Image (cartoon, rainbow, N blue to C red):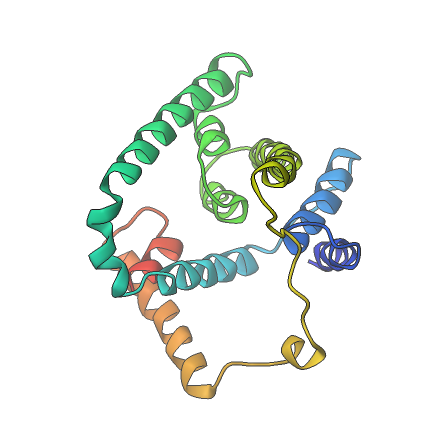
Length: 206
């Protein structure tokens, strides 16, 4: 975690896009490829998975329900194309690279790299293969996106400047209690309903 924080801080200092994700990812990936055996405590992985589930759940609002009908065509195209790309990726990882079905499934799964890796940690997937595959995907996308955005318009990918007060700001006690409660109840609900990966999907539902 210390290495990841140092990598994220360095990436933030040099104004890299998505600094806290890519900085930590690059540092730990390079060290792992260099032979360092880096492992995160199981307890911390589970806690982070619950936190991500709560964050994903809070992204859904009541206003989104009325907009879903307007997104029908776009959502259909996105879901079909995503499913096709995932099937092709899994097939290539399984047949060409010779990875196990768990490794191939999570390496080809679209989504946030941290979420996918944490989900993969609950299975027999090779986390290094999964992490490296998604790291390459992200790096390629980040190399291509700035060029595309430069052509179609001016969109900043830099992390917004954060003041010292914002760094050390904490949510109100009531808000913090509500979020913690959502995580705990969501985890219990996920286990009760026997959801796949209850640590993630339970808090999302809560």
